[in-house]
Image (cartoon, rainbow over all chains, first blue to last red; front, side, top):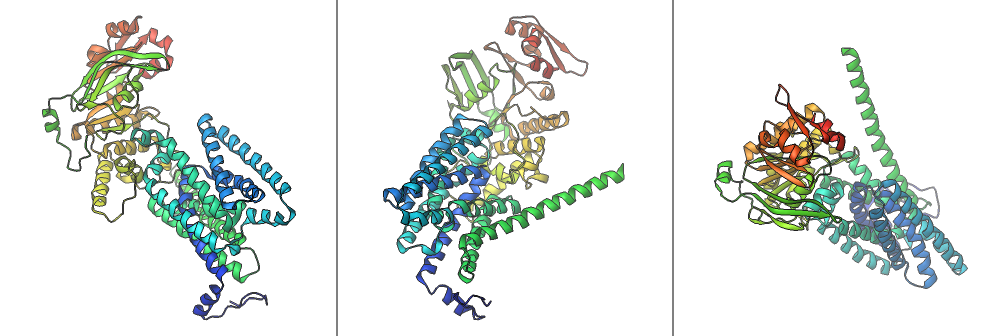
Length: 303
Length: 287
């Protein structure tokens, strides 16, 4: 694979040399390590997000992170902390509004209101920040995976371990509560406590994933792999594994493409995820359509 | 009740035990400052099939939930298998009143049934551990018991209401409970499915020896299986065989207004009278 750009690395057919070249730089090592961890956690938590119909809530949590990250810059604290705090506040807010408004439409409106208010707040923070931090906005929105430091990697390693550990521990009751809250409650599952715990974990994942794909593109690691997994299998364990593997593949392929070509990594990750979703979802719709038509034909013949 | 992995006792051994599976003594429930019912006493023997009947809002589901330990009593006591009623009792299989799963829930039925066995447990089991094979066998047994083998691996959201209901009953059966508590399992099903589910429940109560507590609007689909009925109305209950409880005299006394009970030539029971004006849907469904 030969690149047409003189200033980008040249790949040969010697795979070993290619891999050595890819991991030659520290920033690439960090990018792959951070990307791998974030993708694995995203695939796993994303499955529950899709199962719970909370894709929109998760997307909002990420956008609320914009205010968190820009606010963190303004007040001089690490942006991961700012993101996490903002996400936690949003999680509590969404949870409270959800239990207050039982209708889905009302809760969608509530989540949308929180989302917009926090974007406005983020806008204000950007305006108040010194001019040299203006580029930070771009990073928060779209991620900067090639700029991940050793300290960032340490944070991501620990956060991911905590996240996956807690999620595994509560996996079965959370699955039960997501599928059938009434029966789960009768089995002694703390349904509302789990809902809040889940949103908090989601806030944590968003806080660390933002560095890879940014708040606007985070959907491609959280929701898209899980949605594809649910298209291809109905077995929960298999679906979670598929979601994790897909998120991992999109991230690895995105990093590779971003390294070879002079376009952003976040663009590639999102595009690979979207492309796969279109193919899988489209394939299933076409099959369902054909089945429907052939059964319609059969009925027509018998009549 | 300790979770027991050995095969459940056969019907005869359950019948041999002298303690009733459920004992309700002079119980009352208050919700939001309103007494739903009071002075309720009821004894359910092992293997018995009980239908809980009555108009909407009379507190049929409340009675079931009180037995499940999901609601506190304001007076009296309820014991289940000799212990106080409590939440999460594996001796009771519970199917709550429900709307259907959304069409886009892409989880196979088998996994939904499995939830009844260990869905509420914390921690994550390793798939290759010895308990797994037994769990898979139990799930399969419950699925076969309700006759759902043909579609147990399809996404639950794509199944019909009757198919979903069978799988949910399988979910309740997977712990091999001594009591099966069903809240309007026949509601929102068409006539054919109503009869199908009713015969599955009847068959389960014979094969497993579990006591069945079934909340229903209409006693007719289950009339041939029912041992006794609990009729809840006006904050009170009447308990007895269908012949003694669903009568003009008993219901008129319970409602404190003239009620007429008719028996059709095919054995179906039709209730007419003031209950109709008070609760139209109830009278229509009973017909």
